[in-house]
Image (cartoon, rainbow, N blue to C red; front, side, top):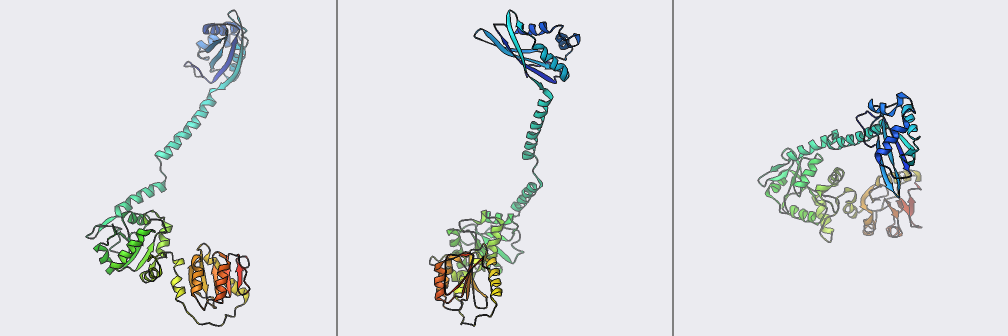
Length: 406
């Protein structure tokens, strides 16, 4: 906007000037006052308007190149729109400056209030954004921060081994044993207050004593270290249930949903012993309950029974319910001829499970694609129905039913 006097400017007249020669800045200002004098009457005389503060300090910038002068003229005004426009038109009447021809052209009349208003709006947005980010956390953030602090305060040192633990260890009949302090904190974060940490791979006496008095659930990381701790603790303490974080994750980093899913999917110590003894590596991997029924299926042995006399439509409805129940689990139901569930296995273990069975399997419902390998094995053990999301196999001896057909 150039240099503006204390006048309260409302408009800025911006114009360019081209001069056929070399002149100085005072020559241009003198021409503006001199050549507009008497042109607009006494009320719009530039000298008088400037004395009264209705026209600000006229600013002229010049640049000399190749024997010619060019530049810009800035005139601040507190007149109304019409009067300001007249002033702008008046300075365009200047045709000579000193001995040189000149041409003045008004390029713009800027409303300063609009510019200020735009600046105020943008600056206000910026200030509000900074205020929200730095000084005004929402109620949810405040609640979380306070709750987190309280949970940190709730971690106590328990027993003679001073183990990190939640505040409900003594009050609870069920205790969750985890690997360390960070695991206890994560469980506290999600409202689970009956956890205690081992603080190392060796089993403290405090844990052994608790295992004799309370129901113990061992909750370990989903890695090799978790497997080693499981073997160590189950060999020296009375563990009732075992579960683990998802493969590759640690208890201290998993979400509330993953924590609850793991705890719901815990297995008994007896199941752990049987599964680990059948595992070549001696490592139990079956934590989620939806994939831990292999043992029950393989130990199931029934004699042939007459096929249930259900109407096809009724049977299909039962199949549809079972398939809907499996969606998202990547598991498979193995059914008898009364459509009772004999067991549930992961799809990856379905073929080997069917191969180990001789009789009693009437139907298989799986959350996936029916393959030729599965139908081949099913034919050998006289399976009557295979139901899946879709099929890549055709069998003359087995009724292959897809989700669309149901």
